[in-house]
Image (cartoon, rainbow, N blue to C red; front, side, top):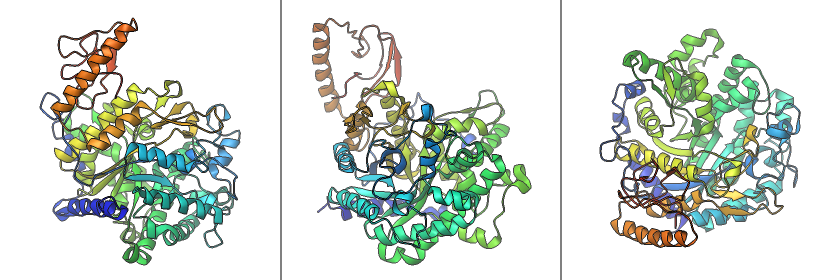
Length: 559
């Protein structure tokens, strides 16, 4: 009974509801206070690494986006997206004119993706619907592509059969090309109504089986990279003015979709709707004046995350710092629009990864440092927006394409990010209810093409069948999910030590040099002078020479 998908949703909903209790006691607009607080002292217990488990019902999952993984770009009646046109054209920023015509072929191999989710043991899967696959002409008033409706229905049904909760994104950047040609895409306010109609169709068609909806994924990058710099599709270089107009329309389109669900579907479907927003994190450099630096840091986050979050989670308007800096260049919400834009999200969905951290360099001031501190960002969200329930809708990093299946750095970063989330929950009172490891499988990485990989599962793009194989990161994430975090288990540490000693003997028989530290029997292969600890119960991060870990046994292998 407890394994039934409805029970999983009830557990998550209970956790969500408990997290929502006392929300009224949290005030808004206090984000800048976090830079006045002392940073966590890594020498104190639990501050550098916390051994504990996540709350009961925590929603573990993984995610993908349609354009990056589906392939089948013109199969079964699918229309072209702006990313199809962009990557097929000479204006594409994609390396070596790489395209996503096949990508991971998830449209045809979706059952293999479901098996990958089963391997991980996760309870949720975040994926996006392809607007041009469902409506090749972009018009949701017309007839949908039957093949596309069947495809997504089959996927959702299989997920539910496997007790995996679908988390569905309506729009992850792949706008129908025809809407770009006919209206100018998101530059045109007509898109607000068109998106509302598309969202309404999706809610009506799939909503009885979907409890978590995400309207858009990281609209900041659509506005800045797609219409401002031209690095992303549709490749327009309209500069700041165009980016601001696009962002304005994206915010209103999201709000329209939320209201459509709230008015027509919430009572019967009882789901939740949000929008995925991305952000970097920034800290003052040492020696800088705290008050002045805190204000500059606040402005940096407001210029990215606050640009979208302040209207939706705040007072319905842009941050004062943006209005002061941009003046008449920044579009204005009418008083009526402010009322229906604010509070149009049922939880806070956060994207934290390389894309926003790279762009963070463009919105910082002298004396600031961009840093991948997810815990501090979650703390800022709590203070700035009244401690909302939070889903980490995209958490992860990337590796070079040459790394292959053994991803040491990927494991370290996964361990670091997820433990930061745990510390935010346990030590800071942030109400995170789920984590989506990004991404499930390797795919087409936008303007980076196939030069980097982000998947937990390695996809062999040289093979027609796009074989999927679990990377070391998949094995590690599976362990975290199974343990629901990082429990301190002396028995498991003893087992790990026995396994490691056996491994040392095997490696020495192969003629490899294995050093055993007097500190803790930490080991590494010869000629390796540094590495990252893979063992989840080890609090150390890196080491040099022979003494790699001061706490527990560290190994390259995971099982």
